[in-house]
Image 1: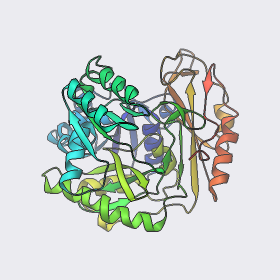
Image 2: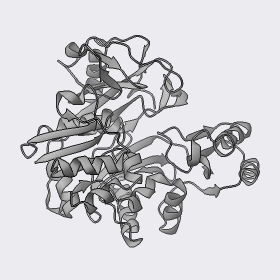
Image 3: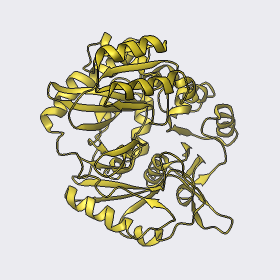
Image 4: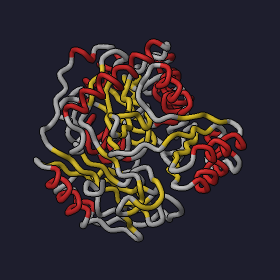
Length: 419
């Protein structure tokens, strides 16, 4: 099969790395890709959000299957456009991807179908949002309704901080139109975990749970990022909690979307808070999380292409998906200054040495004019290792990361140990 993967980050490198292991995949392409992806797939210079350009290229080059990995093209309807062109595509259609593209939609869905989540209100007028914050007090959570690269959520410790966040989103347009509507919700407490599920719209197959570390600095301090590292499985996610999540959250969500005429086929991401009252939904994403994808796919034994096809064909219930009985850890190496201002274009050394004991997924890299690997984003690399124990996986990831160097490189030193 000729397969195209849409995207160019660490998540897409992990997907391409796993698909390249499938005997079914004879030719693998990625648009736009990056320096690491270029080692396992042919990179095509098309922006991930260029729906028309992507569909035209896929048709002209007779792709048998397309994997739409990032949130933006899913929300823009790339899967719908590919299907209309007769090309099977993995990922939800736009009317189901709205579960991530609009937090207001997802909260209303949870309220309607009694899926546990935090108490909330949605606002389109700043003065009413500020009055609500004043009445509720702090801590409180302010969320931009639309897509904001994982950075549109502020957990405010004070009323003033919450009001400032609302003003930045609604008045200053910090996230553009994504912040025109805000969701303000109660601050939940407890460990956060992520569970990704494969689904064909009916059957739900959870992957091993993982735990992302969002804050930029050690000790869970600093601004929120797209993710500075992840582990799998998190020790707090017990079999008993997993069963509750399946019965109270995972199946009800998939059933709710189908009932609403928005069947979801692809990967649905459940961001969960294990509160004293039980597990509750923090957020949904309509695709693999990043960097959770890197660590979870490193534990997958089954053929990923088989799973993708089954999700599209509605035959997921026929598959026996197998996972390594191991643990994994991914440590993100970021540009100094991320998630705020940072520089690009620095040469990276030590990749080959690190790759001897871990898998190094490229997130923000590009090839220089002489074939050298250069930094090209905030999150640059995800050093990923697996081992029989979680401590072993964490130690292996950090040991490999020590081999890699680039100017102003920043990493957290407590991934898997800061809860």
